[in-house]
Image (tube, rainbow over all chains, first blue to last red; front, side, top):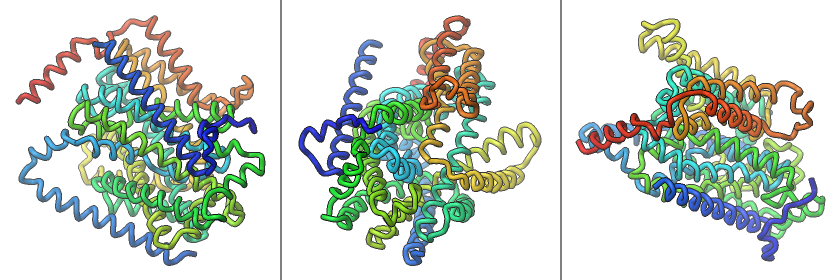
Length: 48
Length: 495
């Protein structure tokens, strides 16, 4: 259980706990939105 | 006991219930003369309103108290409950919300009736009532936690008072108010939580969260500071929660409603870019508060359920603590009202009236409904006393609805066979029961596999194989009925 998945933000040198969680979460949310949008666009284009 | 905060919280509840009630009364009085306008306005909501409604309607006990509690054990990875809701919103705004709008329907049972007939609708309605009742027991626990933080009573005693408060709320506030109250409270709660995170930092050594990070790093638990946790947490919690939330809530009534009222399909798609970050980022504040509570010994001693809320009561300025707890309590009470009324309505309409008293009057039904609500609240109070972990319980409840989503998808896009649909639902529910109440997971050496995985696997296996083998009509979106329906809607809109 102690093996930690490295959050990308720590590699950027941001050390404050709050900002680390904040930026990691925001980046993840934006990535999910981007993937969702691309998938929906491709499905929409194919169905036309 | 924090008497001042307790009084302020009660005043907030009374003022907001009366205020929203008076505003709604005034609004409906002014709309008598322009009913047509109102009906049209109902399908004309702009992007910001659709987005805020979508983001905030799903915020409840699990998002607040559930994340506080779970961050104690999993750390920042508890935020995956919020992240799962981001994925859910992507699903709703880019697919299910658009489908439901296109079909001109508003509820899941209506869709099932359209695709497979009444028996499937009845089976799903009964299961949904059970799931909603399960959520009611968690809301009762949530009220108990809030009351416990303000009074110092045990959560069990708080839950007893909470259930009584909940019944009063249903009686006095009424259902028309609940939706609006939820929205007002969610806005207050969101802003309050952001302010709480800022004020909390000032009370910590150095005026920031470094001491919290230091606590976890020095104890060898630095994985608790990462939203990705460990591979085990990611598999068992993050992915499990995502499956449970996305496939159980993908066709959720509360999320479908704003989609139906949106100006156009484009409005729904655009709303996603505001709704998803708004909902997802809520978890950041909840996780940070939950992580902090564990590092302060006086609150850590209280245990994971009440540590964070008690810390907020003691560390925040009284006005902010009162505002935040009042909005928590009001949001939970609103959900309590909705979750107690839904199964009571199903019992009164579908069982009491349909099976026993077809000639029941409105007064008879209102009486039966009131009695049912009280009985349900008493049972919920008893179950809440066992204090199940909130997020684990809600994920378990959600896993029951996973097959419903897939049965709808199969029917819309592939094949409509009511035999296969019913078989898929029953097989998934039997598997879920076996996984929950027998030693099957241990026998298979799969004790860490969450229920949502099992219901998803059985649903896909039975649904896909069944539809490949059985005969049935084609997917609804390919059928002539669907095109006829679209033409009817277009004609009605032109009129």
